[in-house]
Length: 497
Image (cartoon, rainbow, N blue to C red; front, side):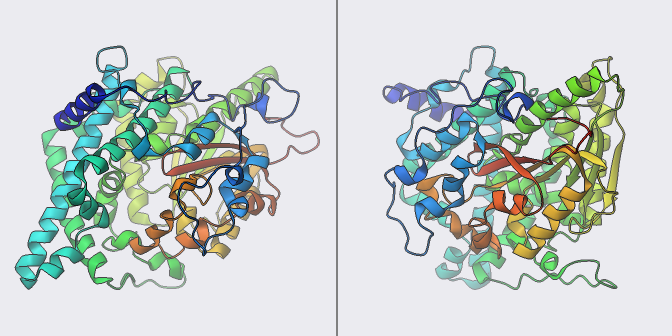
């Protein structure tokens, strides 16, 4: 953390700052009810130019669709876009200087110290794991080529151009955190509860346990990645409990989704991969929820209803995102579902920890706490009744699904969603979302992501329309895209939108 802060101070002193993060703060009501339909309140400023009208920042790859046909380009005419979209579509970290936005002395100091500290911690953890993998490879083979096999391309680039690579990663992080903080300051959601020093992540014993687990997993992962090892898990099950694609070991992680050890280390591995940005990126989902829930309360309050909104998260994983949802809206009746019993158990444990340590603060003594349920379920065949939820969310699921599974999941989300309800899909950016990266994001396929190349070309808006949903809002945050859809209200039914 000290190294990161020192680097920022040095960069700030090195020259004049570039233009501010955004000419205006990110739009914080981009998914609010007033903006979903014409004539119901203010509207969102759209991007001033489509991607197809911009000069490409890198030569276009012949294997990619034409710029105008890329999902991020077509989205302009379909979604109501928050200002984050225009910002990230033109953002190039290597050409930016946003470090002046880091306030280490004012009211936002705690936010910046925490998040930059996370960046420093996960960066150090990642580099340590690479070094450990290199030592292990050299001791095993005594060959420098074996060492290179376990060294990610990013680290190889870092050795060649350390200042450029470090600065680019910091700029990306600062831009991500600036946006997240902007949403917080405008009241869309609260500062993350895990900033509290009483959170267990500040315990040296907790850190040591997670660090050791991560180091062991990372060394194995890097070795498998270098060897292009078999990614089929050896899980035996009766019947067709798990789809064939689900038995694939995504990210080369040990056991795929099918062990407690995998669930214990997952959060550390993904946050290390994104250098501490993942939480801030996935909190973009809350932007859509904030607007929808505000509208829901107004509509149901006017009718005298005392019920609470019902939210379903499909493929909840370790349940970390669900704790952010509950911390902001503890009154929600929530259901977390996942196909992996091991990850679902971890989600239950994370939820119980939030309840025991932070629920009272979230409730403020004035709100009742909604019930939380955890259910093993395949998102392609949900065990819930029709129209049984007001909100359905999916975070980082779709890029790991084959096309037919994506169709099935959207069909199920539409089925269980009540009329007027909202479906939010938060996942990786796609082609056209950040044109500068279009020639490189496909490389993520090499990280044992067999469906990623198809995902970044998939028209999510059309996919939703095919199942009766209407495209609504869109936000971007670094490597993440978050889009919302609503189910048209039925005649005489609830009018949440």
